[in-house]
Image (tube, rainbow, N blue to C red):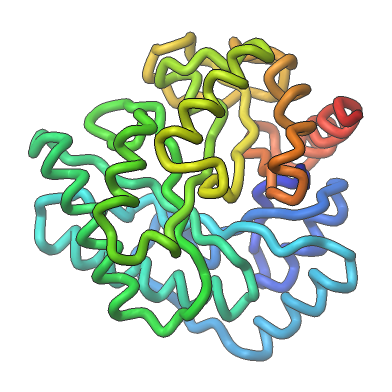
Length: 279
């Protein structure tokens, strides 16, 4: 697994690869803009070229972009839904301009409209996004969720159905968040637990659909539906899951992104720990 963390774009997007290198990352994740605002500032060719040049200069692998936290394509509210679709269209194009292969997004919350309606709306929104966008190759990754509130994506079957419903299934992948799947009820604390989860994922949509991981321990207990990240080995998952995950041959070249608390200095510590697990 290629190891990295979510790094800041403060000052300029082009600084993100430098920050990834400084913490010992091999790859990285970013937002392309403020994740809590709808507005989308211009991304110039000059900034994009500097970004790509820095990725290559520091011998990094292009990783993942995370979409805005405001996005909710499962919403039945027409305004929220359209803003979410438009936001993802533009972010997909920005992601491709930066040569990043994947845009990760939370499937969405149905807000009491029901999971069936929410899944239908998500699949339809993805089709609208790919119908509109000028991005030709960048993939959308559905992130597994903890299942808090009315969030969709806490069951592998839900992700499978979204992918199957879309006419652009070949451009949809999955980002597995370890904290989220544990909080959703998948017990990954042991090697056999990891094997069982991977078997379920393979049967649901195929392991080839897993294009990225978010490597986070969990403050919430198994099945708690609580989305609270912890540093590696400092939560209820423990280290064994990560020892197994970073060595899975199927994901040798797959980004494994830390979203643990503590900022860059703690990222350094957690990345160093994850590297010691490699065989």
